[in-house]
Length: 118
Image (cartoon, rainbow, N blue to C red):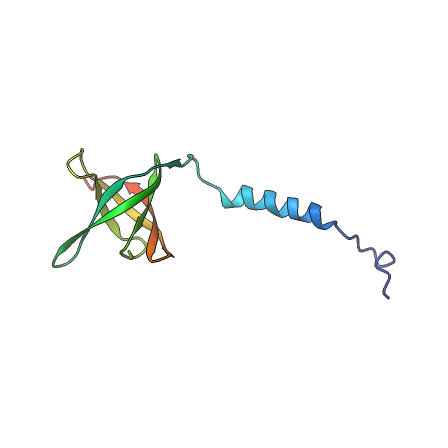
């Protein structure tokens, strides 16, 4: 009963299993089409409410052609639409909140750029 060979069970070495799991994680965990580029600086994030519009100053983390990650003191709901702009430097962009997770005393927010409504 204690003999695993007689039962046809083959043990996989721990190192091989770890490499296999790591490869699977890299394959499934990073499904982005574009590389992220680290970015520093600030960006203004405006949320239009039913009564009042609020603007927060946020820190940029990284950016890609399809989105941006920021850190902010405010928590934003998933799928809410925010307006992004960099002071007086160019036009604003709309972005949808993909995730908002606590990061110390702030929140890490992943945003996907969206087109302006026609």
